[in-house]
Length: 219
Image (cartoon, rainbow, N blue to C red; front, top):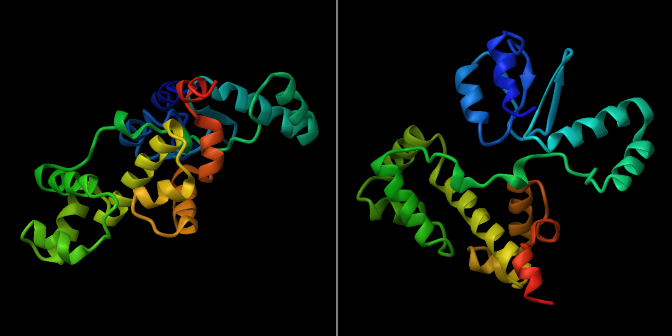
């Protein structure tokens, strides 16, 4: 379970295998074990007899997977209902709290990130962004990629999704209104991007992760 994957790795049991662990520690596992294919989005991974899972609650996903494999989907679904479990979740992605992850990059890329974060709703204009930092577009893309492993647009999209997640969890704003607030005029485009990043459509995400304080305020 979870960080138990590190023990398996130290014992040499993950060499050449697929594996997972909690999203919080997945990068560290991948760094320590370059010969292991770490699938940080997966809840349960079984590869040639060795099983690794996400954080401790993934034991339930593992149990349901075993039941599904040996007794079929109907029995697994019934078991989940009796045990008050979600048998539909397939990914860790919706649970990732980006603020707990170390930010890549150094002074230059972090200045660019801060600018993008402060202008989430503005139209993305690579030329204007490069002008803000007095570099060419080519230099901007190269330096940002070297320092962070992604593009400025990729970072902006992820940052917009993070903001949208917060708004879905804590406010009553419509999905369309939230899309506009984070820079998307078309709610469909926003919903598709949100699902790509989190594994859930905005409405499904809200239904699952709505904060209790917000719900209580409606009572």
